[in-house]
Image 1 (tube, helix red, strand yellow):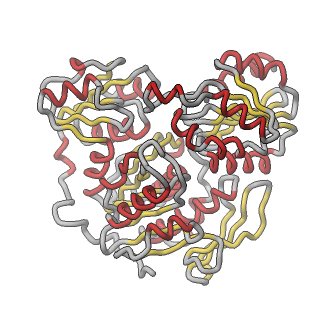
Image 2: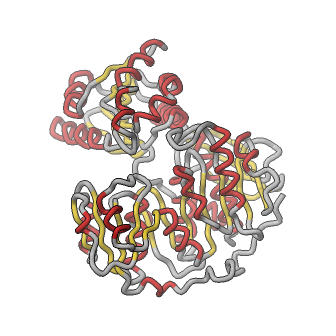
Amino acid sequence: MSNGMDTEKQTDSGSQADENVYLGKAIHFIGIGGSGMRALAWILMDRGAVISGSDSAPSDTSDQLVGQGATIHIGQRGENIPDPCDLVVYSAAVNEQNPELIAARRRSLEVVKYSEMLGRLMNAKAGLAIAGTHGKSTTSAMVAYVMSAAMMDPSFVVGASVEQLGGPSGVGDGKHFVAEACEFDRSFLYLHPQCAAILNIEEDHLDCFSDINAIIEAFRAFASGVKSDGVIIANGEDRNAMEAVRDIACGVETFGLCEECNWRGVIVNPERGRIHMEILKDSQPYGELLVPLPGLHNAYNVLAAVAMLHHAGLDSAQITGHLAAFTGIERRLSLKGQLGGATVVDDFAHHPTEIQASLRAISNYYQPRRIFCVFQPHQHSRTRFLLKDFAQSFALADEVIVPDIYFVRDSEKEKDYISSKDLVAQIRLRGGVAIYLKTFDLIVEYIKGVFEPGDLIVTMGAGNIWKVADEIIRWLERKD
């Protein structure tokens, strides 16, 4: 196991790139509205780049970028790319037939994926990268927040907005760069951090991975890219994660609740879904804290964050003290409001394991009379591959309301294989109560008819289902 890392050391030869290299460069983003893409745009703008981009629809974030000087087009056309243009960055959601991508290549412009651009920026710093099927954004935000609160001034990119950090990204003068590392399309292979975490590994993104073995191999390749004098923090209770780090050249430390883990959490006293935990490092007392967010899954996220922060140079008191003040990130068990006897929560869960964990945390923390879960499936392929797991994941919901599947990245043909009605049927076969309502308007009207004081409504999914939560809040405000 690891003897730690020295983040004072410089990164590999040539990686200490001059951050002024982007000063005055014209950089165009295809799909600039995505959380990661807009985060990179902010960072590059801060470094003096001239930013342009395009997206399918306007948003508050796009307006903010425009307010800082970016040029953003709604709709994607080849003529959106400025002339001259030094670099084009595109998101993983952009397909090869995108008109701007075609135009950029026709003009022989330098074209890179989001993940490659992220890797370039991280390589100029001591990188801290958080990977895993679940928990990446929350853990990345925890690490970035604590480092910021401890005046370490990191740069960071988180896949969701963090109110305490002023958004999803930040540019700091410190030597660290914190980012989540996404396995989709093997994007994280562009990252070569000094310290990495592997939170868990499960079946997901089966539109680009053949099976769980292919996913594990991708994580193994990511782990192999950690710098040789660095360290990996791996979930010691996750068999797939341990397989991914087996015989890796750099140091490996484990986290979890079992005695064998280097970073062990001992649950002292759960308090309505929040966990009071003593932390041991190699069986020796290290610190103690009340996990700031509800749910057992967040106890694991905290353990990984603590280990990474320790290796970044913070002491136990700094880590636990600042972590206790962390309030979470956008769309992760986010309380939208409590009005008229109802509680409205919004959550990003879009995988069966995440749904189960979120519903358990909601049930324990709020202890509602009934839980109405409005779940928007994300991708037809994910819904098809994991249909039975999805159907079993809603056991703690009293009723599940399902609109149409959020269509992204899939081919049109994929729509023929699966629909929300199939998911509703599978939930009912397992004894659950579920209903298909095609549109958001129909869902809101339905909630108005069945809601009673003491109920909790949670909107779930990686798409735009949060709009339902917002509309229910507006209705409750008028009603109240």
